[in-house]
Image (tube, rainbow, N blue to C red; front, side, top):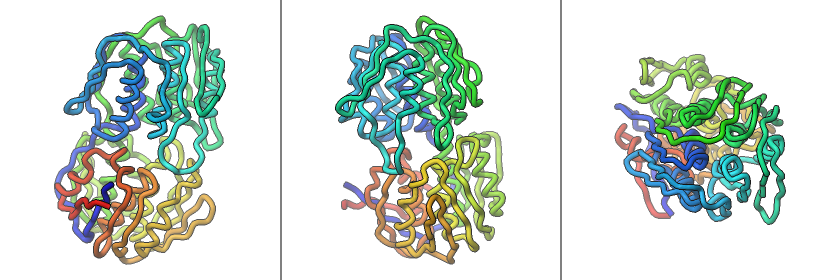
Length: 420
């Protein structure tokens, strides 16, 4: 197992290109289970999670080849309806094979998911949606068992305690495209990754309207064809690189960016006084300005993303003033607070709130990543800190950031790996 060593205090400079979106590619790969025809997915990031999903597809009978950012799915039927624990337990997003398996084969046996430890994330909305479409659902020995003679369109309200669910919206949408009749998903997630999945399904022949809004309408079809698709840029990686430039006072041109996907983050950074220059598909971030503290509340899209909360906390920890960060998606997603405090940060947690008092600088220290985005926040803190920081358990980082170590090095960062 490796750890990442960071020698802080270097201003990042240069150009970097954002990879394809992890949270878009995983359900899109799962959607290939809905057709027996070949599919070609381009712009696929080389991540632990991507390779885990490909292993699941292969275990279900698909022939999937991954080479130079392209995944080729050969023609052939899905031959198994069982997604095993040893595969699904490695990441939560793998649970999205439930919808396409149920839609295509009318039965599915999928292990309850694993993934990052960021608080309780039940699958009740997924199961609610499947039941509404006519599936019989039971849970036995850690597996969800779903079956139906036929699926029928239905009105489905998918609002949860903390708002809409991206993965539940994906799952229900994939099950509904082959159901008989019309399905309406109300309180659907509006994230760009949901839109990207819908666009891929439409290329396959699905009839979907309203994606990107809280109400999605689906008219079921008899079969889906193969399709070719280019994955959207990863807005969370883009946002992380923006903050990496700001926290080091650097000057970085970030390419392959969809500015409109970063609205809430950019709004907060502009409120903080950041110097951002926008072009059609790129964003230049120029550090050096003295930033102001800002308050953050995470919300479903288009609100401030929970997946940027840890990284923003790192920036606020070295920004003068007091900021309050409120987590409304996963109220327990604060395991990085203790690690940032080990580096000298002044952060106090009060329930779903973190009160951050900005200090002049952090100091390098050994820290441990608890989840994917927390690991990114700790790397950012290490880039800004005095001295050396060692980040353990960086396999979390590899789940969601393609070649992040190489990208940071190309921007001038002093980063390297060592064995634990």
